[in-house]
Image 1 (cartoon, rainbow, N blue to C red):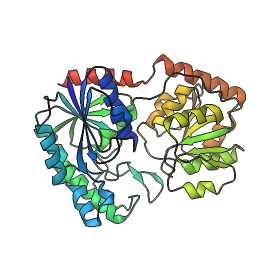
Image 2: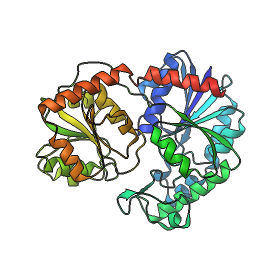
Image 3: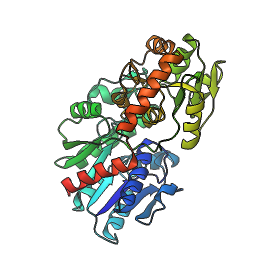
Length: 399
């Protein structure tokens, strides 16, 4: 079997690329031949250095690093990306059985869909977000700091100033969504969801688009090692981009209300605001190994209070794997892996609800929840190998 994985970066610049890289490695380790095509030039993750993986770069640049007019045009429809991808697919060393697309909005554009669908190679698309339906990709009103309830590309959606960057970016993204819908009209897609709630939500948002839904967990790159000791940890930890839609500000506020320190690992637009608070410890970006060590040594629990309908934040699974209780938003797909009151708490992304959950985490409760989290996770680990096995079963079903 020969699988082509198509992503925009060859490193974990975000969750989509992290999953793409790890799935490529898992497939290669299972004896599958993989061609990893990444659009944007740059470094490659060492996981791609495997004898069963051939890496090809299309030589693109991130559209947001280009001049405004060029970025706008390329973001809506990049003929150059389509031509480069068509050439690569036409010169593969061996025929491909499946093409698996993980992201297309930072450089590739919807222009790649006709290339992929006309190639004769079965296509699978993992939905790490909502870009297949929503122009800004996260179905969230950044202008109002709340989840969205509008029908994608309705009149109300088009005029809503919901983009995190500017109205111009919203115009570009609306244009891209319109172009994408036209490219997919009359076509059929096999889509992979990384959480159950994504199937329910996207089913309502996709309108007339013809899709077959599949469900596969994201891989979690955590080896079984020493279990965390949350009873001795003091801080409520947050790992990820420091933004309001992910609830970083809520963690700081609720931890202060609960009389607990807050520990932040990551960077983002809220960095200065959070750094100014005396009970907050800012550690910046850290490698995956460093993150695990910090959580094991210092955290009482991990908080992931997303305001948006986040599909599958990997940090939640990684915390459960090391034996940390998780306080997760009931809007997050990852909350499906948290058993409320057993391995953590599932609460609304609300300051008071979070503070109540944090206060309940005395040493005994944290230890009990953490032990259960560790046990239950390793009964059915979301490993790279398990992810690869699930992919192979799907590929054999579709090919």
